[in-house]
Length: 263
Image 1 (tube, rainbow, N blue to C red):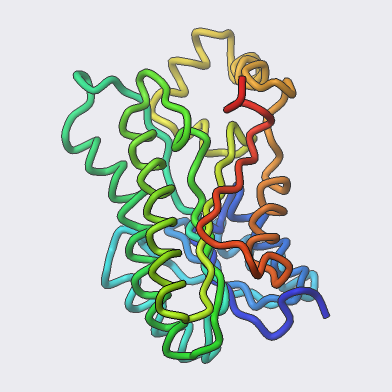
Image 2: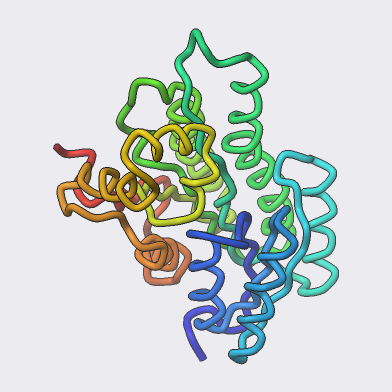
């Protein structure tokens, strides 16, 4: 039956990368997976692939920065499934730029997508989970950049560090409420996903190092393990935090960084 039989889960940013790997893994464990993403083409692709393999999945177009979109998403999930057991706040963007060079609009965009979205996801999923009274698990995907700072990445680091402490505060609130909802964060280092090539700095970085392949090799060499993580390796950590086996884990930060933060 799998770990998540008869459970429903929302995965934001589920159309690619870590979100896609998590969607596939959760569906394999029997979960009804709601892929929430603005990328309709890839979101439907992932959902159709899961269904083709016998899993249960649905794609819902969703803007994580919109409060109205969150309300609509939660209402749709409640209508169709009658419950929400797991939320994976995974959607996010990469961004590079020094404090003096970036615009205030760029700063706000990073905060809206990376941090505000997690607040909105927590707010509306907690309301639904508490209403159902069956507990639940929320996993917020942060980054090793939320633990270790880097020059030229102030906005990204601040947004991911914000997720780290927002997670802990929310975990304590749920513990005090006795609602049975556990809230944890995951902190990957470099993961081999499409997000790199969508980042505002990638084209220049790639040209400077002789192309995409060489640039990815440089990224890998920054890890003590001399490789980037696979999306499936991060998904496995998310699975653990969502499963009953981690029933005594809340407010924790699961660092999956190949040793990067302890160098």
